Amino acid sequence: MFLGIDIGTSGVKAIVLDSHGAIVGQGTAALTVQRPQPSWSEQDPDDWWAATNAAIGSIDPAMRRAVRAVGLAGQMHGATLLGDDDRPLGPAILWNDGRSFAECAAMEAELPKLRAISGNIAMPGFTAPKLRWVRDHAPATFAKIRTVLLPKDYVRLCMTGEKASDMSDSAGTLWLDVAARRWSDALLATCSLTTAHMPRLLEGSDISGTLRADVAERWGMAQVPVAAGGGDNAAGAAGVGVVRDGKALLSLGTSGVIFVANDRFTPNPARAVHAFCHCLPDLWHQMSVHLSAAACIDWVARLTGASGAAELFARAELAGPASGPELFLPYLSGERTPHNDPQVRGAFLQLDNDTNPNRLAQAVLEGVAFALADGLDVLREAGTTVSELAVIGGGARSRYWGETIAAAMDTPLVYLRGGEAGPALGAARLAQLAVDGGSAADICTPPPTAHVIDPDPDLAARLAPKRQAFRAAYPRIAPHHP
Image 1: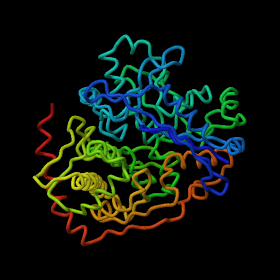
Image 2: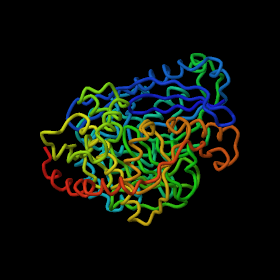
Image 3: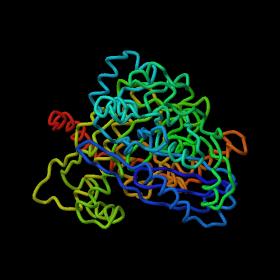
C-alpha cells in the first residue's frame, strides 16, 4: 500500500492506495488561516505537522502497517523560514498573501530577464517576493534565515530530517530556472539569497529520504521511503492521469486552477499564465490560477447563514441559472490570471429589491465559473488546445455547479471516481513510482469516469449576457483599490 499526504490550505488529507490503484483508506484534519492585516495570509508551520499526525492517526492501523512508501503534495508558494536550529522563525506567508506587490515590481526592474528565466511574471503569490519583503521590512528576521522551505517540504523535514523539494513545487518559488530544472543564482540574488538557503532538488518520483524512527513508530509503519512528491496541482494532475502533452484538468479547491500538461517549456507571462515544471521528468505544464474558487462557496455560505456548501448549492439550484441580475466578482483575495491584481477585491453588483440568499448563491457559482472561463480563454489565446477537463477537488462534488462551469467554458467536464482525493492521490502514485519503478503512463492512469457534463447550449445562451457584463466589470472596480 502507498500513503499520499496533501498539505492543503484548509486541511491535511491523507489517503491509502492499494497496489491496484484503489483508495482504501483516508483521513483528514482541518487547518485555519490567520489574516493579521489586510492582504496578509499566514499559517503556523507546526499546525501542518500536527494536522498531518492527526490525519494519519485516523487511518486504520492495519492499513498503516501495510504502507510501503509515502508521497507528499501541498499548497504551493508558502514561505517557511527556518533558523539555525531548523525551527520556524515565525508564521509561514501563504500563496494568497498579497503584501509583496511592490517587491515584485522591484525584482522585475532589477532583473529584466526574470520572466525569461522563471517563465512567469513576478506576483505576490510566489515565494521570492515574500522573502524580499521580509528582507526589507523585517531585517532582523531575514538575518536569521538559514533555509527556506515550501509547506510540504517542511512536513518532509519533520518526517525524514531531509531538506528536499521537487521540481513542480520549486518552480512556484520564482527562483527556479524552469527550462533547465535547477536553481537560478540570478533569481536568488534578487532576494539576497543563494543556493545554500535552498533544499536539494529532485523529480517527484525520486526518493527524498525515509521516515525517522520516532515518526515511523508514531504512525505504526516501517521506516519506509518518502517520495519527493509535487506541488498540489501537479500532484493532482498525476493522480488523474494528466501526464501527457495536451491533457488538462480543472481543480476546484480553495483556489481554482486550469492545468495543462506540456512536453516542453511554453511560458506566456504577459497574460499571467504560469509555466512550471511537472512533478515527473521531462514534462512541464501551464496553469491559469484563480485565487478564490471553493473559498467563495464557503464565504457566501457563512454570509447567508447556510449550514455549508451542500446547502449553498441547493439554494442556488432553487434560484436557477441566470435567475437574477446579480453579478459576483470572486476576487476575495485578489486575482492572478488574467489580471495579476493582488489588490482588487470581490464585489456584488446589480443587487435589487428582489435579491435574496438563493440568488446570491447562484451569482457566486456563476461568478467563479466566469472567472475560470476567463482563464481558459487566456490559455487558448496562447495556442493551447483544451478539448476537455478532468475535474478534481472538493468542488467536484456538485454536479449543478459543474453544469454552470461547463456552459460558461463551452468545454466538457469529465468527473472521475475518487477525483475529489485530488493531490493526495497523485502523491500516493508518486510514492508507488518511487519504489516500484515503471512508467508514469502505467501508474498515473485516469480513475474510472463517473460522469461527463457536456456544455448545454441553452444554458450557455442564458449565461452569455451575464458573462459579458462580468468581463466588463473588472475595469470598473479595479481603480478603487484601498
